[in-house]
Image 1 (cartoon, rainbow, N blue to C red):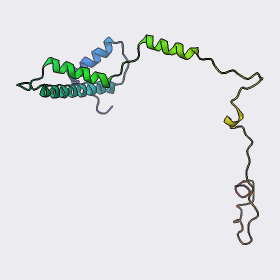
Image 2: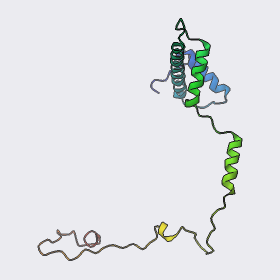
Image 3: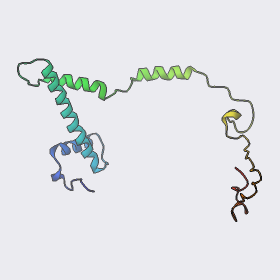
Image 4: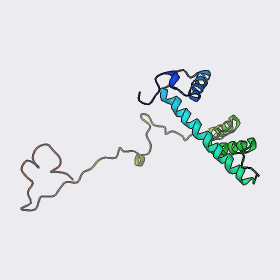
Length: 156
């Protein structure tokens, strides 16, 4: 595989840490590029968060433009608010499911056989084709085009 390190010694310490993290989470089978993708995400996330923290530090009009832990915490919280969407709680999901399940299902027709939607919604209507009128004199069909079993010469 091109671009993937062959040995564990070739991997940076952060990549080894990601491999250990995956192992502790029970993930044992993955492609080698997964570690590199997670490493790229990690570096991008940290650098963008530190840039945000630096901007917050500048806006706070501090004497020195030094990033404090409070700036980093604020940057993480603001990034978390719009980057990572939390799933709804189980109580909210149960309430939505109960509201949906209270609605009655539509009645089925009392006929036997296949139950299909109304005829206007089905593609079961009879087909029709328009027949071509007689060709004007002098505009004949090229040899072999109108004869045979093909429908091109007879129908539109």
